[in-house]
Amino acid sequence: MFRKTTVMLLVVALVLLGSTVVLAQEYWAWNQFNTAGEKFKYEIVIRSLQWDYNAGGEYWQETKQYQTIEIKPIDAETSEVTMANTYAIPNDDLDDQLNFMGGMLNISLLTGGGLSFTEFLMLGTFAADLELEVGNSMQTFDGARIRVIEKRNVAGVEGYYFTRSMRETDADGNRVDILTSEWVVAPNVGWPLSVQIYQDGEVVYSMVLVEYERK
Image (cartoon, rainbow, N blue to C red; front, side):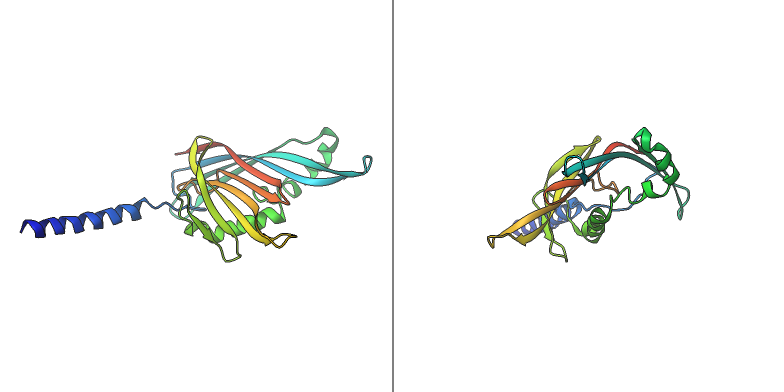
């Protein structure tokens, strides 16, 4: 009787342990906002190569923006979204830029153009399936490799830092991983805590959460 009871207790313990492991798995709630209200403030830096006619060469031009997004549920079917953008604009360009405010300046603030927009689209395809645990990795349908590296804290929120890379063949025929983007995400925060997107080894887009409020 004692032996049977011991075996049964062992089986129950293993089942409970397995359930605990399953419950401990964390996934990113990408684009889900289920709280009484959330407020994000991002610092966005976009870098692009420009030609200097006087020097006869290229240089990196950097523009910085701040974007604040506040999301408040109105009822079960509707949410109120408030967005505010802050730019640093040279005085010589102020008149021209203000004429386009709400138009050209607001295009893809959260995506930074074509390359970054592609990265965000790829993000949406795997976000719900990536188990957030340090050491995990997965391959997406486009051949990219996602690796969860470590935990990081951004704006007072703890999240998981992971990289996205594409495997290519270099000039010597060796297979190498080319870093395309870095992310920090928190399981219960619907937008990234931090994003850096690369092109030819250079950061061309950066979006970092500097303030976060949750009700």
